[in-house]
Image 1 (cartoon, rainbow, N blue to C red):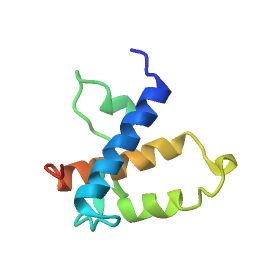
Image 2 (cartoon, rainbow, N blue to C red):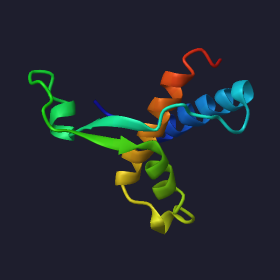
Image 3 (cartoon, rainbow, N blue to C red):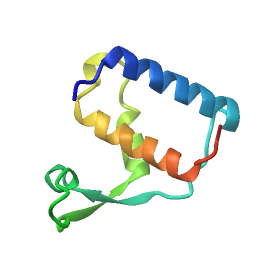
Image 4 (cartoon, one colour):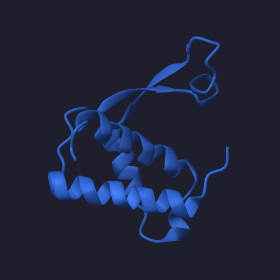
Length: 96
């Protein structure tokens, strides 16, 4: 599978814009902690995940807040933002 980054950026922008129109500029998330599954296990549908750890949305957001310039960004930040996007989608399933 190939991902077109321009299309992904456009889709993300559209979705965040619609969420903002529907819910406002700030959204309160009820959850903070989540189960984190290692990448090897997450994308292995043939095995049961055994290496679970806890992640925390507030930690993820705090870590992302350091991104003031693109030089500060690292690929791992995509994982952090995906945790926040997942929580937003779970807690706002019918936002728009």
